[in-house]
Length: 268
Image (cartoon, rainbow, N blue to C red; front, side, top):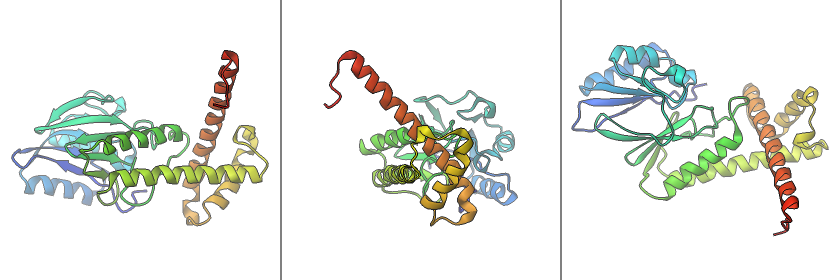
C-alpha cells in the first residue's frame, strides 16, 4: 500500500549543487521521471541516497537510482547498502548538511528517522495522514511505542519545526501528532484487551491453535469501522498487539518475582 503515494524527499541547501535523496520509492516510471525532473530543473547532483526502511514502496527503485546517479545507497539493513550501513545516533555530512540517524524500529525492524536541520524525516513511523500499521512479525509494538516517545522527546526539546513523513502531507505540529499516535495505540491496546476479556482470555492464555480465530474475533470488533479489504493488514496489527500484551505480562511477572525476592513492597 502506498496510500496517496510515497514521498521521496530531495534535500539540498539553496547555495549547493548537491542533494540527498531519501526513499526513492517504488519502481514506477512516472515516479522515477518526477525525481529526475526535480534534480534536472534545480541543477542538482546526488551525493547520497538514504532509506528510512526497506519496504518496497520506499526502496524498490533505490538500487537502480543510486547506480544511475553514482551515489552510495545507505540504509539500516546491510543488504540494501552499497555504502556503510546506517547506525543509531550516527551523524554525517552530505550535500553541505548535517544529518543524524535516529533508530525508530516498530513499523519495521530496520526503520530509521533522519534529523536534518529543523526537520525529522520519519518514513512510515509517523504518517501525514492516518496512523501507521505495525504488522507481525517484523513490526513490534513495544519498539514502536518507544520510538514514538523518542521522537516526542526530541520534538519537545525544541528545534523541530515539522515532520516530513513517508506518505501524506507535512506535519507542522510534531508534539501534538506524536501524542495522538501514542494515544491511538493505547486505545487500540485497551480495545484488544477488552475483547480478550469478553472471550474470557488473557493474551498469555491463547493457544497457538486458537490464535487465528481469536485474531479474527478481535478484528471484527475492534476494526469494525475499517473497510473489510484492510482487515488482513488489521489482523497482522492485532497479532503484534497480542504479542505486546504477552510481553508486558511477562515483564510484570518478572518484576513481581524480583520484588518478592528482594523484599520490595509492590504497593509503592
